[in-house]
Picture 1 (cartoon, rainbow, N blue to C red):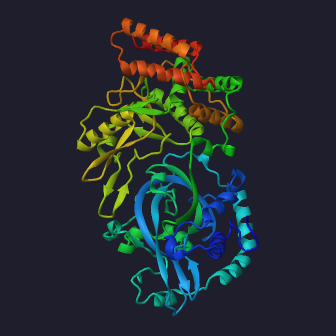
Picture 2: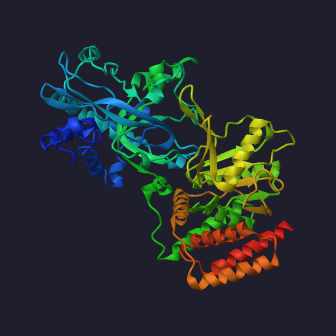
Picture 3: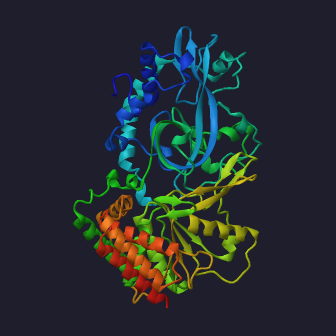
Length: 589
């Protein structure tokens, strides 16, 4: 699609203006369109219709921001941490008799001294951050991509300047402001726009919520032509669009003083581009685990379960070694790692399978807990750890809270993406008293464990947000704070030396875990009666069994089937689950 007039990668705004001119000649009317897409989305979607094309686009992060060029095409992979409402901007204007557009840019351009006809359009603002707990192996930026991109920008810089001069007039900020005198929208200066009324009344304070880490780079994403229902809070999304930021300020951020976050009212609403780069989104897609794998590929469809069996066997051997040759613990750990909320009935999250490994103390935790935590970081895209101590619970901000002084949702530790694995270490918990914050945090964690929901505090009301988080608890005795679905005494027999894993093997295990979690599952009609009879017999043997216990057995059966690449429960796998449950209960006696 890229022709001599523009290059979609290094001169995306040239492509936007080129397509705008073509749309005008085909009857597109900016005066009545309200900013509706004139073909830009299809242009870029076609241009980047496969993974190989998308992989050419630099990923915006704290490293690439130092060399990527403004007004070029970038990708940002992150989680929607806050939704900032809508913003009005000067979307189109008439230069004499010719319509021009400012869509997908921050700087409004108007000819000097002319009375322009201007159309105000609307766009949505999303405050996005790198996914909390994202592990290093998922990052896809590289020195090779940097060199290739810099070569491209060098080759196209002169051409882009010539095209830009032909397509639109270059003017300075004084001329722009003069051209807007007398206009009801004269406050729309270079790099500014007008926020909706609910966001404009902000006191002097930083509009930037705390970053998830010192290295993370947030991004203010501006959305066009996308329905509001398309994206929601905490979605993990890849945005592809035009980057705008102040490179001089961005390079100087390390030398700013402690008070540099005190912004003016306008800056607080907009977030200064030297601290928070803007991305004007052209196309986007929600990301699943497979998008973080090399080549974004899952394993083949389970026509040959032998592939799954071989990978399962090697992964089980690895996990068993990490757990001191505790084969039963490794079996339950695998089922736990394959769990996923796949439905909700009333307040019950169907598919969750939290695991509490008990009989761990500080000493054994420093060996087995550390090894397992490091292993999970190399296998799963997002992992987090929380120390369950009195001090931590009494002081931590676990739940997100709305701060109406700056009109921002301040993130909490539990504002995490679906698919995150969360380790809770209770081995260092000492006797003590929880204060009001500690009690609230304990309740937040318990609600997350039992219902897979996190409570958000909007000051005047509270709202529960559904999530999907795998939770693994380490404790000396059965956790009272975190009543897990499965409680298993940990019984290692020895400490094994760490096995060296090749990158190819690690990638195969990641693909295996992602593929198994994505498989559909059902129970055939013939086996339904067998399962029902076994559950009735189990209930008669142990009257303490409740509906949650029976539901957990069905969840374990699902995980066992998909771990072998099977989408339908077999009698063999059902019997394996019953035997595992018997062995677990024996350990608990």
